[in-house]
Image (cartoon, rainbow, N blue to C red; front, side, top):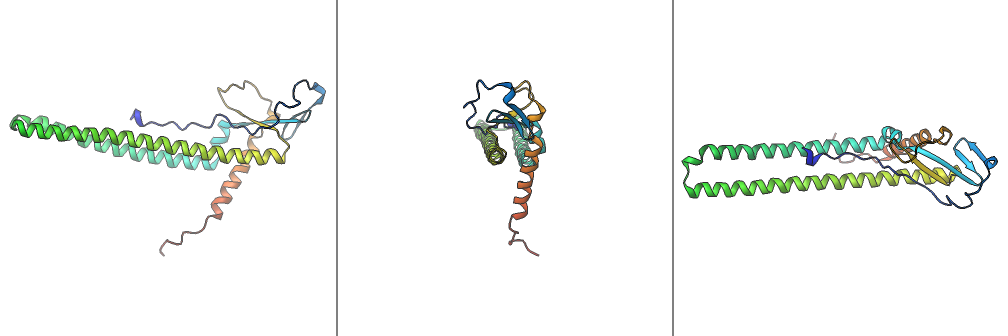
Length: 206
C-alpha cells in the first residue's frame, strides 16, 4: 500500500555547536593542529559524525525502527483484510442485485457506501498514527544523540560537531575529524546500560 509506506528518514543534521565563528576567520595555517578527537584551529575544535554509519550501528535506532516497521506491517495487513472483506461484499451485491427489490438494493448500496467511507477513514487514521510515531521516534533519537554529543564535546573540547552522509552538502571531510566510532560506542553503552537498569516486571506470573 503506497499510502501507508513510511520511509524511516535518518536525522540528516546533528549539530552541537557554540562559538563556531568566534575568532575562527583569519587563523593562520600553522595554528591548525589535528588531534585524536577532531581538528583544532586556533581555539576552535571541529569534528564530524557519519550519520549513515551511526544509524546503521546505533542499537536504539535499530530497535525502534524494527518496532515501528512491525506495527506498520500489522496495520497494513489489517487494512488489507478489511478492504478484501468489503470487496467481497460488493461482489456479492453485484452478483445478487437482480434478485432484489429497488428498496433492498438501495439499502445495501447505502450500507456499502458507509463501509467504504469507514475504510477510507481507517486508512487516514493509521497513516497519521504512523507518521506521528515516526516523528516522535526521530525527535527522541535526535535528543539522545544531541545530548551525548554535547557531553562528548564538552569533555573533548569540541566547539562544533557536524554531520556527514552520502548526498549531503559536505563533499569532503578529513578522516582525522571522524568521531563516529567513539559516538556509536558511547551511545550503545548508554543504551545497554539503560536497558540493564530497567526494573524487573513485577506483574509477570511464575
